[in-house]
Image 1 (cartoon, rainbow, N blue to C red):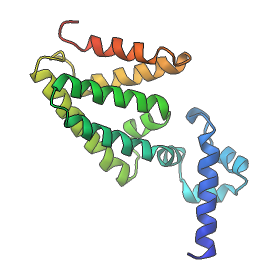
Image 2 (image 1 turned 30 degrees about the horizontal axis):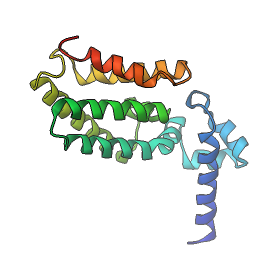
Image 3 (image 1 turned 180 degrees about the horizontal axis):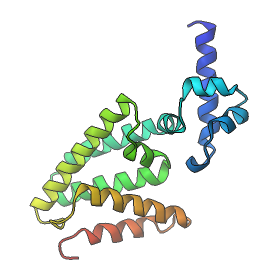
Length: 179
């Protein structure tokens, strides 16, 4: 590996390390460059937009979510499979503040888009199976579930996080046809 490549890799790592310490809403590429001790052009060379930086910070979390969604499809009980999937999605979004950005943004890399498309397909299948088996209300869509998970994430962030499981349980209970 040439010195330029290793320098570029070190710069990228510094930028990512610096950005991880900041709330997503406060990310500004110029500020990250200054804090990382690299030139502004270096940051823009690696990440043309804040969204690209947020994606780089959260691509591993998206991969983990897809892996967990695949695993949930292997659970024979449709209610447990759906609950496991939704719980995983919510917990990962709470742990990785920028994951929601990748899930909602139109401007993502081809790699993130492929993962997201697979995730949404798995979500649709899990929901349809749960509805067909009578464990989720028939009037619920994946869009509803996605917005509810975002709502739980937001509610958890407003507090100290100790009520995370309670809020998830309340949301999941509300999806039941007997709710």
